[in-house]
Length: 611
Image 1 (cartoon, rainbow, N blue to C red):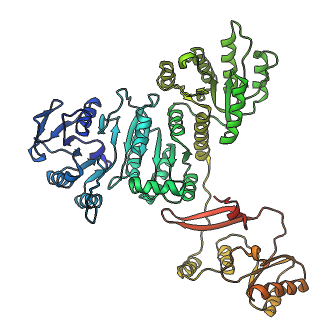
Image 2 (cartoon, rainbow, N blue to C red):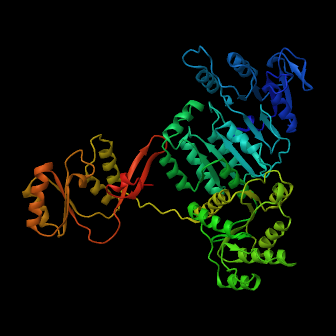
Image 3 (tube, helix red, strand yellow):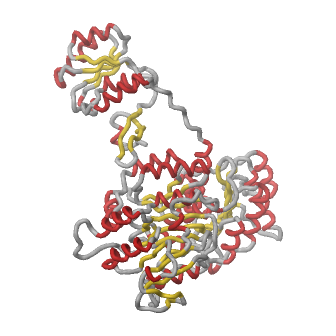
């Protein structure tokens, strides 16, 4: 079945509207890129000023083309874009691309971008942009980008989708270790959004991993559906989500009109669907390199081989901060390492195997790494090293990697303590061989955390939700539709109705009714104020614990009612030891209802320990 984005991403023919002979102009670059990508379809140039552009016949209008163009790429000023769009719609184009910002100095209401969106939707046009850099469909030779790029792109298995144009080019154009199958800068997403691209690439057999630079999701339901699809197909998603702070969120709004949403809500969604989150561009690129290699991690944590004790200590510290588990070696690996290591070198992971040298030093290093990776508790491994002069990689390290993988079948990485790998010939050779060469211990640990997190999420079972009978469901829906706040006592009844064990609760407003309720309950009891508007009852002395008889109960009620009013809750006290927790629900503007879990009482806000 043909994907609905096919006419945009794999068009049969393309017209460049505003083609230009001027070097470095958008109208020139997009034609050059289509040629460099060896686009297999027919290319048309449209500009009344020229007869030919880059040996492509040039026509004055779309109506003069010898055949219909399925995709029209606009390279004209914003003052001309509306007329150009109308021409493309009359022409019968199915898709269009706009790179420009769609900002006019003295615009009217609705503004240009809103008028363009409305017209494209009315015409059923697949419109990409504006204010984006386009896309590269490397699998089908469609380099639909109006900006310069490197020459040595190889069709691969990695996808990069970015709501930042520079977020795409910073990785795509500077990282030959990654072989991309598809990359897109989505821009303002007037019609075609990052969710649409994500849905497309998840259907492609070449896709092994998808990285996203995300400001927001404009289609939350479709975004969730894509996460479900990625889960079903076992495709890891690595996301760099910006807009964590209020200032950053405001900048996203001014940059692309993106409302970034509550970061806690995004994190909850990411956790639910096993999305691996990274913190910066380097971590994103490293994680994509690591996921793209062909080998599957084993169980357990990571193992690392070092030729420096100090760098080993650095990795241990960084691994702790990154939350990456270090494998504790079993008896077999420990014994085998003791036979290889020089006296005084402990057979532990991480392993510092630097010795006095000797003719067989590299053979012994190979044996060490093979022993580490073969341990049943090793999921993946790395040789951590310092570069030689001029960022040279010593060829012997390649043999360490191959030996480790041959002994285990597990992923093996060469990690430089500092950056400097991107274009080194051996770095490229080893990465393409399946042993990625990485820059920096922190980036490697972030990528390892993503790989192991994706592995663990794939194994996690979803718990079944017990059904609620139809009558109770309808009754509580009607109550919750009432804007009157649900009281604590009502909430306890609701939670009990849906199967959550709750202590006995009684709401009263007099001493007589309080004592009557107490007669039906077992001491010890808890008395809490039920005065409206008090959220943290303990802060105002509105909670009394451990009430063990009627006299103590009457005294507690007298104190609370005198200061806070007669309305109270009497609760059966839970005497089991444990940690007080908060369990609640909140409604996010984008993703809807979310469960809140964390430390309870005042700690929920003081520590902000909720998830």
